[in-house]
Length: 290
Image 1 (cartoon, rainbow, N blue to C red):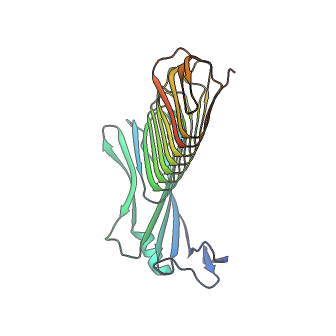
Image 2: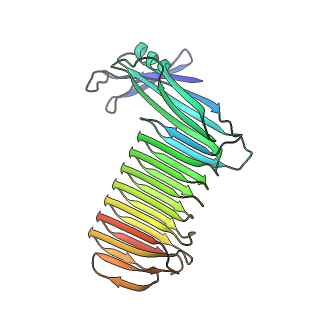
């Protein structure tokens, strides 16, 4: 386990000092948040994840990132945990760090829960930030959510739900359903499955659907553009709508209808409904076969 302590301030001059096997970060003149000076202590650890009978992972953190890297069946599964405890001084920061309890536990039905909680009643000046980097079988169903931090998922073939409130979401997913959502940040997906939902309120949506066959779902942003790539086998009843922006679609559509703010048509062989919408931004649909 590595432990680091220090003061954190975006505008301070930061000087690393090596002492007693730890990196101590000092600042020029101190650092103050709304509640006063904040000091952080940090530690890393790695834990195994039992894969016998495992079919699903649920991952939760409030402040911190979540990264998932899908592995082949039979490979060892692990989670690398980065914990940060904050307080008004070094002693309180280390006390907060020690009070963070991380759990990796079975919740029955083939599901394992990964998350954290305060092991003792939280003091008013304590802060906690916990990030998870997971390596586990890619055929799992993954449900990952953080409030402040990014979510990145690679090499998954099961269903994926990836949600953050403040941060970007990036997913590479195969045959399962996909739901990726953020309030403030960009959503990027490389997807080959049958159904997806991509949502952001403030940010761009990018989706590579060139490996999809028939695909249903919605890609939505309130403030930002939407860029979608489709392939020769991608099939849907496509609807593109923008309130303030343009639409550029070079995908081969039949039975199409086009106006300044809306484009509809049969993409490929047609089939399920695929909706693309932005309130403030442009839409670009590009075909790899064009």
